[in-house]
Amino acid sequence: MNARVLVVEDHDLVRSAIEVALSDAGFIVATACHGDDGLEKFQSFHPDLVLTDVMMPHKDGIEMMRAIRELKPQAKVLAMSGYRAGSIDFLSMLQRLGANDVIAKPFDADDLISKVSGCLAAAA
Image (cartoon, rainbow, N blue to C red; front, side):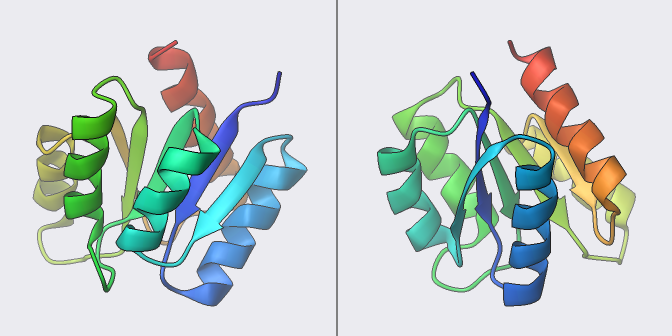
């Protein structure tokens, strides 16, 4: 069975590019454009992994991660961010806030597939 990945990203082009890369790699992908939409899709799509941006309108990635952890504490979450200032500290903070792993934007398709696969394997 192919893993189900929910991609939550507010930028249309980035979300589409991630969807194509993951689909081409064999993942079953659903998308959401912000945290509220992502939380709704999480409950109906039942993903094996949530790949979420952090800075988004209508519920940011951190708020969404917390809500997901309340619904399903063992959920796998890979957080992504293009935030630059002190990015290493910011990315480690995301792990302390509930992300299983983090990936810094921009990334290429190979890095993305590697992170997604690693996150799925590590928590399996």
